[in-house]
Image (cartoon, rainbow, N blue to C red; front, side, top):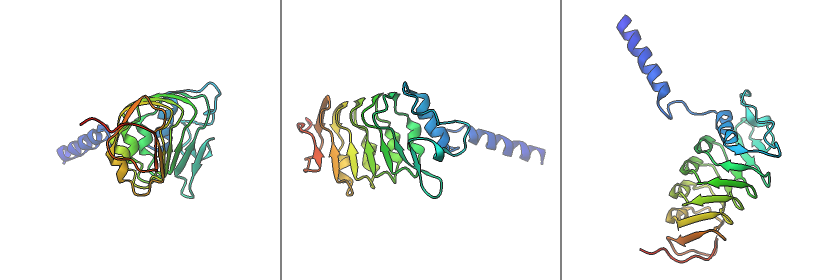
Length: 194
């Protein structure tokens, strides 16, 4: 009996250390984002890590079930990086962060946001490639990645999003199309070399 208890305790503790075994709360995810940002205007002053629910925070919108459905940080002079933890906001419908100074890459984990309808990261300093996992956002209607420093292929996976109404890639560093764009895709780039 004692051995069985020790085995169960060991398995329970071990599972808590496995990444993904304990899903992040929305508060933890948003505070991970805040920690990676410089906020000279103090627009994130209400983002309190000690609150269990972020629905009272500025620039956050929630649904009737107190789940975060929107993050709106427009022209807030924020710099820093996007973080993979944003991909754990399971009810998120709108992530709108244009006209800041956010740099680094777009986390592939944003492809986990199955309810996301609007993703606007325009007018920042994002670099690197566009993750193919954005093609997993099958509820997406608006994708704004224009005026950044993105390079490489615009993934063909994005062309599989049937709900997409507009996708803007205008004014990026060095992008190419991995597919033949239709008028909903804004930006003039060559087809990628095979």
